[in-house]
Amino acid sequence: MATKTKWTIDPSHSEIAFKVKHLMIVNVKGVFTEYNASIYTTDEDFTTAEFDFWMNPNSLKTNDEKRDAHLRSADFFDTEHHKEITFRSNTIEKTGEDEYELWGDLTIKGITKKIKLNVEFGGIQKDPWGGERAGFTITGKVNRKDWELNWNAVLESGGVLVGDNVNIACEVELVKQEEVTV
View: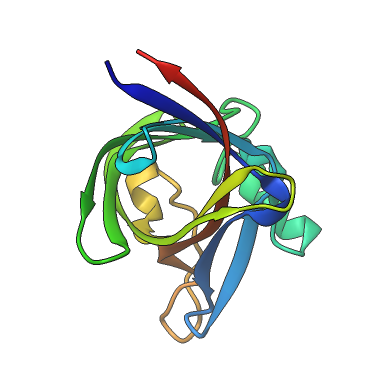
């Protein structure tokens, strides 16, 4: 029999963020403020993690209300018809001492594509209240057009207003909840 450990995301110590080029010269950052996950590991071995993550695309914030409204529109996330973005892990491979590759299915606007994320494991620490926490930095790059996030505008200089590549940059702190035998 194996012991499964349940973990939850601590939203006050986590950030789900992305960056994309604007005018081909600077990155604009956005964050999602509503998200959650179902995470189970065998014991505390994160290479065994079963990871189902979801976030509300309507919670997107880029520090510009007009841009946020445009990103929520049918030109991008179409939040009226698509209420969730999901990521479900397939495999986790150790690539270095505290480095991993996380492969999984990312679903945006009903379109599912397999992606690879790079994970840096920060370790496990006891917190002041007797609990245990695990920390991760997660990065990756996807092409937004793979999920039909196609809107753009051509610039007079010949470039485009919004870059195709989206850089994913997340800081995630997990809280150990309980252990169950399966």
